[in-house]
Length: 348
Image 1 (cartoon, rainbow, N blue to C red):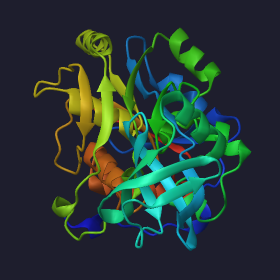
Image 2: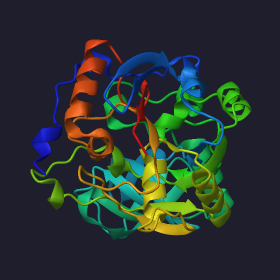
Image 3: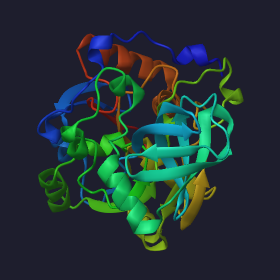
């Protein structure tokens, strides 16, 4: 499809630099199957769900994976920034490096008292880095020296700080390995989760370690020419069975965020039945896609020309989503990772 179809003007003032406090006080634009709109808060979510529905959350945990250091060579030193985004071995990560143009295999990297070596170069400013530490010792060093990897549209306007350590992590984060937060999950509080449980809404988890490519705009003119960055994802067999059982009993499957949706769709067969999944997914969902494993979606408001905006257009229809985003902009909803939410209710 023509990528320009997914473009829209967005005032810079609507890009959220901090989250709502408390988390579930964020605004929630609710869209019914016929395109009707209601303006609510995330804490009102239980009103739109019923006993027997099942909510699927991404329990990935964001690593403080942005490291600032130096590239050291004999007779020269240069500042460098590294974003670790995929673990390859106990002592090795794939990373985005800035500046990467003059980086060569064998370069020594120093991040305070943590050292590493460039083991391989890749396209797009990527490199493989082998560290002098491994396993838990490396994890501890990254936690001590790294900062939360805020997306470029926030990081370009302010540095990450101590508040982001908590703000950019969901309350249900468990599995460390993500280079970005599953942002729809940032709206949840322990109190909201308890109210949903009291309503009889089941809760299941998937894991998808979000890569830095998730939030990037599509730069090609034709969406069929775009290639998604593979991301690691898991759905356990027990969770798959329970979600299948809930759906067979008439419950609706609510994906909390596009990462949960993409994991479920990757794990579904042609009949919509979920199976255990463990591996890479590079699923790219655009209008015309037939959804098999998700009935409802809670998501944030996304970048123009992004794969995430294309996904929600596939879920509800391009013209409807353009109308919804125009309404969100006109009424001052906050966009992107720390922004407000959109609950998409489509007919199963």
